[in-house]
Image 1: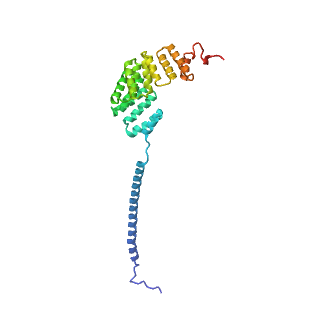
Image 2: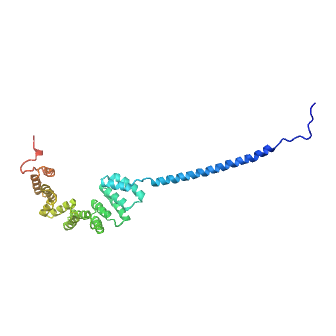
Image 3: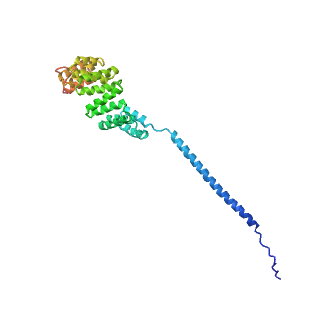
Length: 287
């Protein structure tokens, strides 16, 4: 006999389901909260990492392009120095010293018009920079603009009258133009400031010889070199003035004092002469 279905059918309990719903909701909220915290934490880590990297970048030793350029210019490595100066110009927005050193490099490379441009840019940044006025004078001198060169040298001397090299440069430029009294004045001033400046001494001797004052020139040379070297140098001064016979006699006198003096022997050989009159040069003797 099949049992009858009870009129009072028991409804399946729903309490477990009701209990699971809050649990699921609670679990879902936990997931969202954890994800938000992770994102915040990740952002903080990223920010801290960026700050640390920025700090390390600031503390990292930077290449001193300007100092390296100074050292290269001093060694005469002008092309390499210009590369460093380009970088120094970008890093320092082109200060006076950067353009002054660029001018010196262009002078050393015989790029006189570029040198003029560089020295002008240096003076745009510091009109009172005496070495740039002197450099501008050299650039003008070597490019044939002598009047402009004298003006630039003069300004350099006004700004720094104690620089012997400034006076020497102006003196030599005046000497080349045949303005001997002015040249002599500046060359003597150069030597009074720096008695050991050989360029000024040689230029003054040349200036004296150009005026026919060979005894004074000879005395100046003898005071600074051996008797043989002085005789050879005096011969060079005669040569410069087109006095061939007097030059040859000086070269021979130099070799009589020091037969090992190579410069005097080479100077004689250029004239096809021997150390002794009437005797052919050894280099021309046939075997």
